[in-house]
Amino acid sequence: MKLDIDSLKKIAHLARLEFDEKSAKKMTADMTQILDWVEKLNELDTSEVEPLITMSSEENVMRKDVVGTHLDHEKGLKNAPQRDSDYFRVPKVME
Image (cartoon, rainbow, N blue to C red):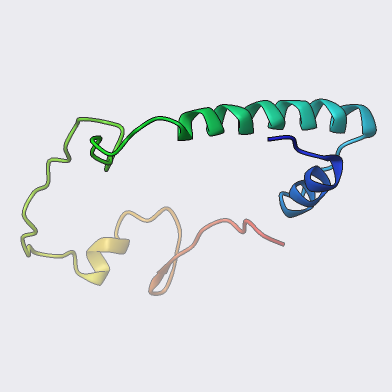
């Protein structure tokens, strides 16, 4: 599949990318190669292949949720470096 410059400009706009002319020509060639590779993959018969749920064979080990005791408000704030009556005081991060 041949990708033209107009298609590349539309894709670049959607992806918020900017290219100069030299880079656009190289990107067009690279993306054409990628699309050709994907077309080649589409030729494979995958009717007997089960879809993957994950790329890893590892399984999550989950624990049961158990209701336990919670800290009361005062104990939670006991070791706070700074507090303001009922809340933690933290440094300002946004102006």
